[in-house]
Length: 261
Image (cartoon, rainbow, N blue to C red; front, side, top):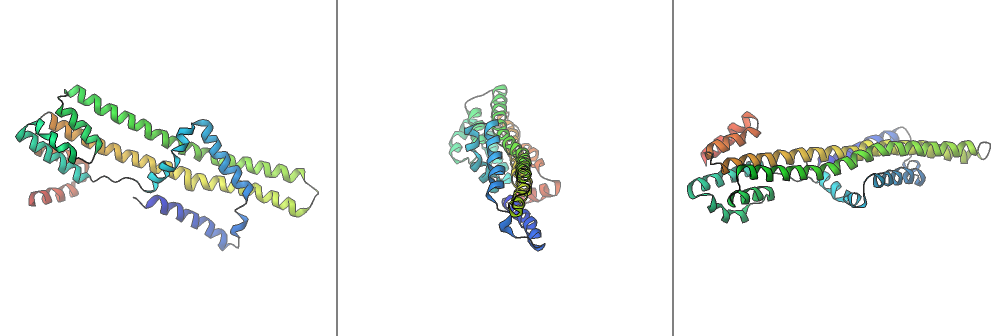
C-alpha cells in the first residue's frame, strides 16, 4: 500500500508521455510555461479561494501521507487489548495505569485512561464518538480539497484553451509560426488540466479516502476492545470479537498461532 500511490502516478505519466514519444512527439513541446502557469496556478488559486491559507498549507503533509501512509498492525493491537483485558480481570482495572506508557496508539491510550479514571459506559461512548467525529472532520477537509482541485484542473485547462484560441484568432493573417504557437498553447493547456486531475489530484483524494477508512476501522477495533475490557467481558470473548476483522482463514491461522505460544 505504501508504494502504490507514487508508483501509480509515475506509471501513469510514463504511459501517457511514453505513448506520445512513441508516436514521434517531443517532450519539450509539452512543457510550455504559459499552459502550466494557467493550469497549475489557476487550480491552486481556485483551491485557495474555496478553502483557506491554513488548509492549503497542509497540502505537502497530505501528499506525504498519501505517498507514505501510516500502517497499523491489527494483530499487535488485538494482542495488546487481549493482554490488558487479562490483567484487568486478574488485578483490577487500576492495575492498567502502569501500562499506559507502553501503548503506542494515542486513541487506545485515551480510551483506556478514561476507563481507569472511572468513566461510565455513556461517558466512554461519548469520548470515543467525539474523537471519531473530529478526526473524520479533519480528514474529510483534506479529501475534499484534493477532490475540488481535481474538478478545477480540467476547467483551467479549458480556460487556457480558450485563451490560446482567442490569441490565434486575434492574430489571424500574421506570422504562421506565431499562430501555430498559440494553437499549441491552447491544446497543451487542456492536456495538462486533464492529466493533473486524473493522475495527481483525484488519485491523491482517493488514497486519502482509503487511509481514512482504514484508520476508522482501526479506531472501531480499539473501541470494541477497550469497551469489552471496560464492562468486564471475558478476554477470550473480546479476542474472538476483535478477530472478526479478518477473513475466516486468517482468523484460524492467528488463533492457531496464539494457542501455540
